[in-house]
Image (cartoon, one colour):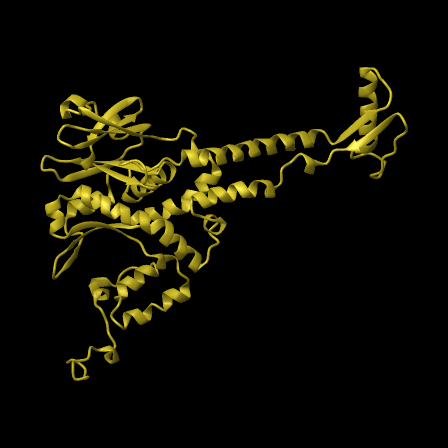
Length: 387
């Protein structure tokens, strides 16, 4: 399903005269990071929080601020394509950004150049190309086929933007060794547990015995001392024929302290911790995480959606896309209830406070009015209240 299965045509290099290849490409990490439960748990709180951000079209001039003034833009943000909602698109882009430090989405336009759909691009590799007029194009490898699009039609989010002029640095070099340690440790734990469940005692015979005698003596030991129905009452006695040594599982099964250091390094790479992952955070911890990890992505999405959906002329008239999300949504009830003092001082209107409390707006737009107490009126130059 999707854009690349229903399209038969592709944009060819010759059509756009892509004569200069910059030699800069980004290739997704094929280590399948998303298959790791640690990696997935690290990025899930972030992607879900980004998905819950509300996308809005804002048109602001010197006098008024309009919210979602164009119906087609509102529908584009609510349902960017036939296969997903705006929330799902935001989560998919956030997942790709976290795993690859790059995320791409194609903007489809009508004959008038207006955006009609947005499709995420899940590619194996992408290369930056430039023609003789200095225009940038991206060539994607999707399911074994190449597709080339104008960079102006591609929403491109990136992170760890450093050496490459266009793409964010891949997380693969930094994560590969850590993931190999975790994978090796996990496999070792499984094998050690299996072995410890099978071998619990080692019998060392002091004389040379035939194979059938070894099996018989071992079976007699198991039946006498290890069987549930044994009458030995937990005690075992041996003679000089053999020495019995119990296998301690602790010597073979790695414990949590041996893996915690590596897991903490992965947590640190994704700027998260156990409290965030296990949803046991307090208000201050979430606000810190929000400002460090979520807010920068929302700002980048706002800037990228704005400059790719609107022309410079449209942006000059105050059009922009914002992704609205407040860290107050995760505040304690005590903090939320204290917002009432913002209402009677005209800082917030009742509907804004009700939204933070997950309540519906007041009917007929009555909650949109800003309220001020009489003792908070503006004062004039003579020190009196303005009438």
